[in-house]
Length: 339
Image (cartoon, rainbow, N blue to C red):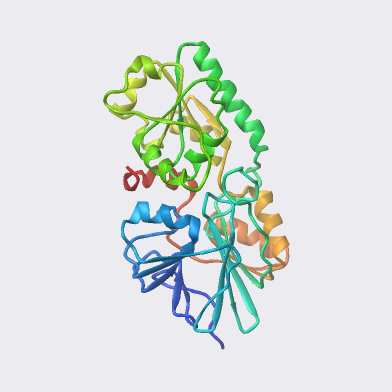
């Protein structure tokens, strides 16, 4: 029985033919990285290969590393195995990784979404035999509204809070979600203030994307200056002494988990906006179908439920354990690395 082109082991997703790992979670010699979130681009690898727009992002996070940047659809060969990066649409610089060897093609998505957010290069369908997919929101209950509708609601919320003399605090993970929010806020309403973690990452992303002006909140920032404006901050700041400077304020979270009212209550958030950087149920299904893949491997999220559904639809579907996190974990557990 021949070894599969990609296998899952204790260090990550391994391509034995090339002796290289995809998004490994333990230190390895050579790592091909899909995107900059901390669960997919970890420290300690000897050599990194990623899309060139992701290079400054992971350098900011990981410090001095040996990293090579590649262009979209640029084929590079390691020990006879062909690799290439293709847009994943998840966050800026995010890629799917295509692996080809002896006529067999696998695609590892990392994390992805199909809606064009106006910031990340939009998701591209890549034909393959085996498709490795996340399924963070792999339940029929998850169905995203068009982005423009969500941002109309966010901007109307901000305007109403301003009319009421309150500051708007909008929580979003400092890499990806924060910049997406910034991109679509209506700056005619007021100024955008940022937490240091958000501002530091946004300065890196400004080298790659056009974003509106922001002002970092410091010890010298006056409460009266912030009043009525909007603050973009990591979820980890909720309930912290830092946020008390904003009183009176109203809080909101932008996340796919805001689909469930209970999630908002548990987080003690005043308002929830359903906005995710991952696929919804239909996005996952349509993406898988478009690849033409017969085999599907589900890595993180509602893996058991989703893979069972795929099997019922005739796919050769299974699950694999990884150390990748879901959106709620992204938004809560990794901010310390960004500040």
